[in-house]
Image 1 (cartoon, rainbow, N blue to C red):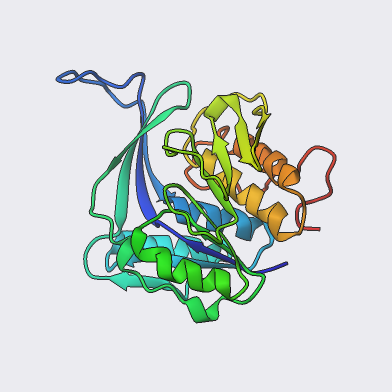
Image 2: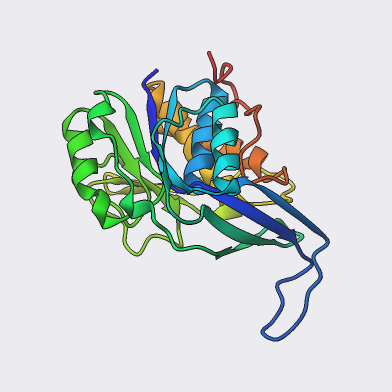
Length: 271
């Protein structure tokens, strides 16, 4: 297995479970509230580490209690936190409004400083899998350098470089479908559509009872990257990603569950 390098947000979440999203000027009472680890990058890194991968997290936290909590959560999950930088100020934090059907609305609190982090280009080895879980144009030189060195570079829209292999993201994040990069478009309960080599293939989502959609896209990305890292096909990756996403929406959590389901008909993902 190659090493995985996840570059992206590390956040402390405040999840509020509500009966509805209030209209402007209205009131709604949360039925439950919880603070918990989250952030797109941290979620993907944790899922891959739980599966047995060697995962390096690249991102930042603030010099505050939330930052210490997040660093501890990642390290406890087995993620390498040597490249998690402590920056002056606050750790990223979001408020999640989660409706009864599991859909969530996200409100960011603190300014995003991810574009200021140093990406350890020289530490990435040929064959390693790099995933930009968020994108800033400042990442272009590092992404190009890692691809040129032989790493498999993937990311989320709108980020793309000529050598980027896969672009993974929600249909709401794509303004256009890139011509040379394989675009893997998640569509919530509708499943996933893969656009590659002039054709489109749709994969339906697995039936499940959703209670919290937070992190479902991250779980999908992690499952996809896991199979790709093992040298399996893109179809295998999509199928495992859909299985991990289905499991994620069944738990009241931002980070994917420790025990990841297998792709139908497959061996244990740690095998």
